[in-house]
Amino acid sequence: MPSSPKFLNSRHFNSSTTSSPRSTIVMLSCLFIGISGFIYGLIAPSAGYRCSYSVSEPRSVRVQWDNNNNDATLSNAAAKNRHKVMGFVGIQTGFSSVGRRQSLRKTWMPSDRIALQRLEESTGLAFRFIIGKANDKSKLAMLRKEVAEYDDFLLLDIEEQYSKLPYKTLAFFKAAYALFDAEFYVKADDDIYLRPDRLSILLAKERSHSQTYLGCMKKGPVFTDPKLKWYEPLSYLLGKEYFLHAYGPIYALSADVVASLGALRNDSFRMFSNEDVTIGAWMLAMNVNHEDNRALCEPECTPTSIAVWDIPKCSGLCSPETKLLELHQKVTCSNSPTVVSDD
Image (cartoon, rainbow, N blue to C red; front, side, top):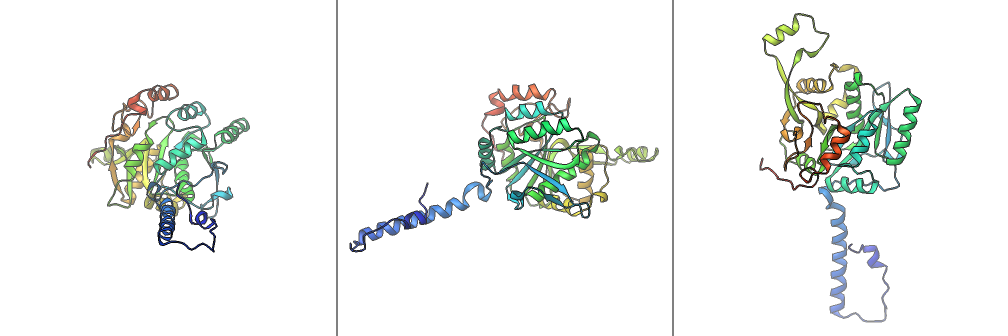
């Protein structure tokens, strides 16, 4: 570790001793090296991205909503300043997914706070489990214990229901933007096997579009809205009206896109029954750049796979609690070198 200027200045020299030119040069050289090392240490790690949490500082944060303007307010005083990261990864989870979270913490997402902090600093990414609230006091009590033990949550002030996933997703992006100053915000499910190092490389790529919707794209029909009249789906089908949207298990939105989402009121969005279709419809309306990357939906671990899940059999891994552990035991999943493509 390079010595800081403060350490160098704390040395005491005998003022009655005349310094030789050689000793003066040595002293100046040491001072220059120390200052240079100090400056480099401030700007070098992860191209300026650094998770500056201390181990004792709470990482889990509860986000509440101002009903007047739909702005996110953070109840944790330590989270008032937005943390600078390259990407924020929100792992969507629920009260019934305790086993999935435990499997994840034994695989690609470390359960130990120090190990998780090292992962975040090495990748420039921050990771949190995203969960809403419940009326069941026993569920809340169990969640509080888990938060106290692992401290890796972002708690949303929205009811946790499968039928309200589009609302939770919007709340997640707004809360993540309020908490983290990131270039990309990643929505991931708790039943996929992820390689954070490869995700970091993907997000760090130079892009000409500031508004980017990144995911494993598929074509979905626009007639998935149950409110359409009976004859409208047929007309859409005959007209071949389709739009691209990302598969739901993992996708990312650039900061400009999330900023636009955060500026709009909740009631200004059209909500569909499926969360991934809902996001896709919004991205179509915002005319953002769609970036398709098949490494985000690999059925097997490969030297280029970023996210592995059982496509198309399951929306995620089938039997994720056991499958996550099985995949992590394979070198091809957990410890294989990364092949960087030229594109």
